[in-house]
Length: 92
Image (cartoon, rainbow, N blue to C red; front, side, top):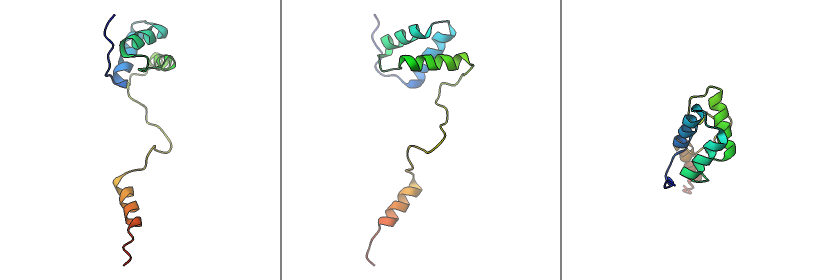
């Protein structure tokens, strides 16, 4: 048995899924190989199936798709300056 890879990226694991899927490997076997190589936390079984579906539909991108809606954070330089200025109570 090979030594598990401890440091990996989502893109790396997705590329492995794409490679194995394109070679006809079943999603259940892909998940098994990923879990053995990268650890159980690398990608869930359902996520492997989802990525296989997307690749089967013609997706080629390994990156995350842009998300719609409210951003997770609104921290930027402009907003930080606004907050700091609103808290500036010099009493003068």
